[in-house]
Amino acid sequence: MATQSKCGAWTEKGTRCQNLAMVGASRCHLHRGDWSSYTVEKRKAKARKRRRK
Image (tube, rainbow, N blue to C red; front, side, top):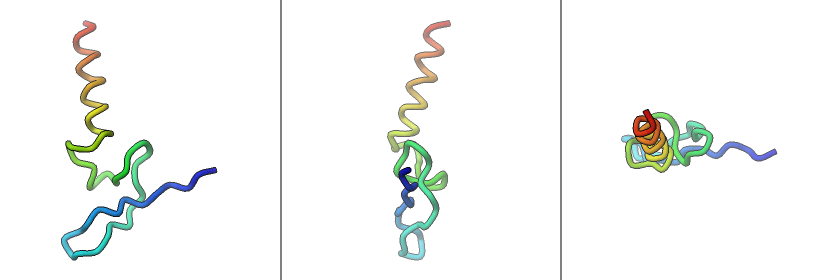
């Protein structure tokens, strides 16, 4: 069983974020943003779904 990694994004305090990363992403829910592969894949899936209708 693999352990879930920590986010590790830099916070405003200058320390690393200690939240757990989201499944399938390298960042937590606060730091994943629009640039992350997780969010990009979700956006592409929505677009594909819209095109099928």
